[in-house]
Image (cartoon, rainbow, N blue to C red; front, side, top):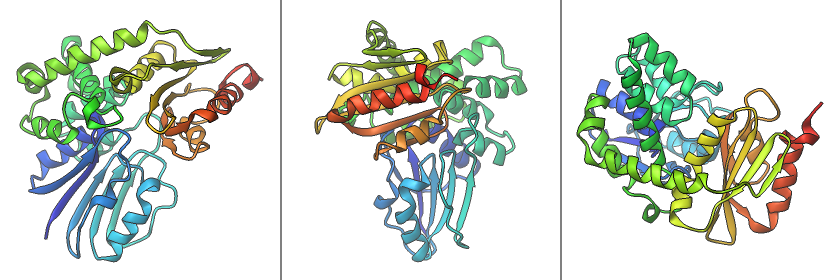
Length: 323
């Protein structure tokens, strides 16, 4: 029997897996990637009786590979918070999925483990831009404001490192970052002792400062769209910038576009909680899009489709969407 751990290389995926492996250590083949590397099950060469654990990856985007693994007799444990579409019924599949707006995969795992490693769930929730969820969990542990701030910063730094068009854009490959994280049972020790986290913090703050100097390229009553330059720092910070915009002005929709190869844009979208479409539903209209209720993205929007995107944003959340 072999084990495979397949996960999104952002804060939520890393912290969800870390909790599971603190509870049940195994020697596993690690399969991960950047934030947009979603269809990872295709890279898993598992056979009958092997166990594949999947975390924070859309089942919709991995369904064909999942069904191939199940047909081989592979046992699959699937934890996620994205819209899965129809979930296959198979004796080899255990699927724990919660698509509610205040859930992330780290929180799902925290529930299953009855809070045994809750500080890591808090890190994952902060990284996934769910501050209310994270603070609620922190209150159950009686954490003071300083320690909550440390977990917030750790989550944001881990999440920042997952964005980029390729590993050359980011400071450290997601798999290497996970292997650093798993050395630490205590996230406060990771934050205090690990030099890479200090470097990530400095780089994130510098990139975010550059983004905050930009002005929106399109605004309507309820929605802004931002076009960042074709630079590595833009590709690194696009998702972090979108999260910051959503926190600062949660009543508006925010779309952050970054030029990528193939005459296209990478799009990070944050939708308002109380108005209009789910972000994931909106992004799926554009072919390579998906995500979750309040945060989603489009992997490659052709530049020629930019006017269509802006019109759709206005229709969904701008003045045209007002009653």
